[in-house]
Image 1 (cartoon, one colour):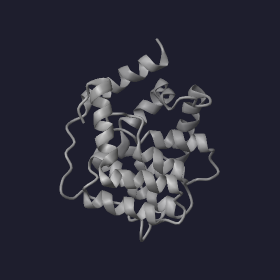
Image 2 (image 1 turned 90 degrees about the vertical axis):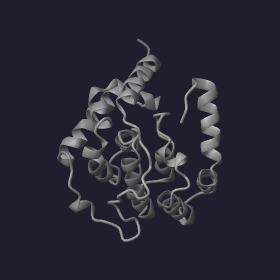
Image 3 (image 1 turned 120 degrees about the vertical axis):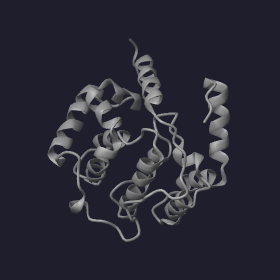
Length: 209
């Protein structure tokens, strides 16, 4: 079975397991990117050491992560992916650790990319704090905005939400943000990105988002 075929089978299964995600007027946000939060006080699903071992095991399977979809070859990754609420704090702590390689941190980040507006928005808020502190770079912010799951358009779809506009505008005002990231964020805020993605998925996959 090819890697691409396996990926699409997994994604179809996970999509079928999803319940409909409608954006409420206000999503509970647990991370304040302005005041900040202490990584040491975050309650984790498993110990940081165990989580680090899990990422190491996943990395042995994906090797050089030629394609981000390769992570779905790992059962351990899928376990993280289908339980984002349980492992979100583990991922936040892990990607903030600069002693980890960029590939290892990206593997952890990809585990937070399942469709689900509450978790996606909270992860964006938390990651923006790390971005403000210089603990992660713009490539990770971009990956959060455009997840590997093509069904996950939570951030770009709800661009009119005040909670989403607030954090995206803050990213744009960050002096660390390069021009390409700022333009990407502007396109999301204007609704251009969602309209283009909606048209693409409808034409390419007969998929409604």
